[in-house]
Amino acid sequence: GTLKRVVRKRSVGEFKAIPYVCTLLSTCLWSFYGLLKPGGLLVLTVNAAGASLEAIYVAFFLLYSPKHAR
Image (cartoon, rainbow, N blue to C red):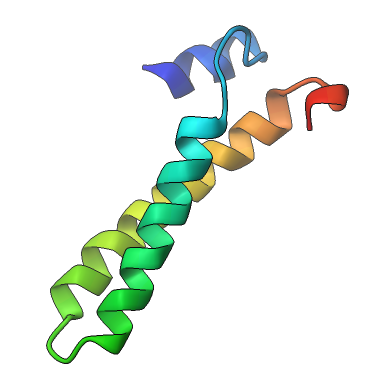
């Protein structure tokens, strides 16, 4: 819902990017853990997919945020 609203309005409005950046960091760290852990393929794949989606969210936030906020 949030991403649709941001793209439709072409502005992030009152939304903050910090939850999405934190989620991106978290999924990246869990993906790294999945790489290191023997048998961690499921952890790796699930969190790599999540990191990809969060990277898209953050990219849209950067694209539609005001220049001074970037």
